Image (cartoon, rainbow, N blue to C red; front, side, top):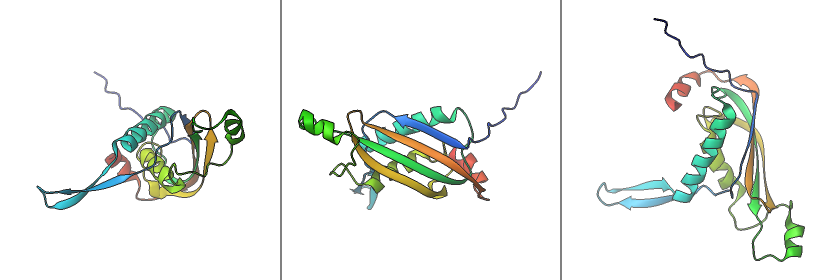
Length: 165
């Protein structure tokens, strides 16, 4: 009998994918647990569902490869849905323009993506040393994510790969 040991696929240099859904802001809520006597925080259900969707697309993009262990550059473009209440002329004018709205700030949108990529594309979100983030208006809401390995391995991250899996 022959036993085959799967060989992990090397991490890619660049991972790019698109999540076809309205971007969602990272929101935690604090709740006092009377039974345990302390405050607990939890991720809102809508944010949790979007995080899981990003994880699904990230996993597909990785194609079974191991997470990147070195420093990474994370570039994310958030395409927010143009409001239905906007006139046709206004919708045409807004398409592709920078989104300045109450849809959540850029850092909270980015945090949800970083947390979703943790353990799949990169070992930990502390690996992000460079990046770019922008919000745009669009008729087709989506999130475009690009993670690029910068080539500097970080010693000590290898044990975390096993913990994350």
